[in-house]
Image 1 (cartoon, rainbow, N blue to C red):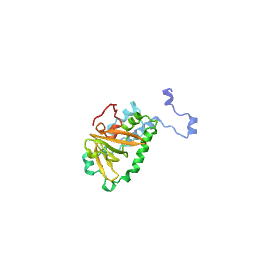
Image 2 (cartoon, rainbow, N blue to C red; image 1 turned 90 degrees about the vertical axis):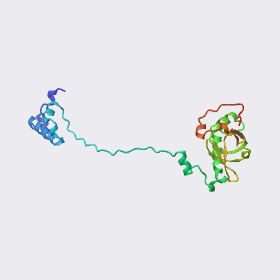
Image 3 (tube, rainbow, N blue to C red; image 1 turned 180 degrees about the horizontal axis):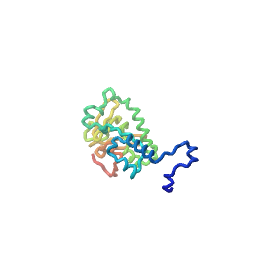
Image 4 (spheres, helix red, strand yellow; image 1 turned 45 degrees about the vertical axis):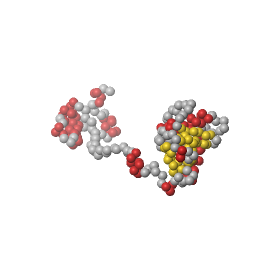
Length: 223
């Protein structure tokens, strides 16, 4: 568009239809100068004539930004091992050390293992089942100590209620909580006719760590 067309006066036919009255250049300049004086907070800092002559003027209003209070975003920190021991988070109360209370957990575990192994059948590959069990969660499993360098542990059977890096905690049918160290012990787990043996000395990881561990096949394993 030609610059001359921008500054031309409004035609007479549009003046009547739009009901507007074109102002002279002197009135327009006076209005703009008065508007700038009222809008600017400190008009003395600005040269109004220079703004009108050499710069484009944007007739707008911007709300001043309020200074928001700084919020210190602190990440929630978890409890350390000492705090957990002090609060006794992992301790099972004596009134809860009852075998029958954990039988529903055992039934859930059995269904979990059946689903994990794609349905335990007599035709299932034992090596496939063994590989799945090595990385499975054993909370709720019934385990039996079949070998140990400590003879008093041999024959202990119960439902696994807590697994730590170095020990198993089980509830026996006599409603006793037993803490069995993994090292120097062999555990047996039976489900749907499959019996799997766990060598505790090679099983000293947490359940979460064991799920990502790659186990090597070995011919013989010592206690």
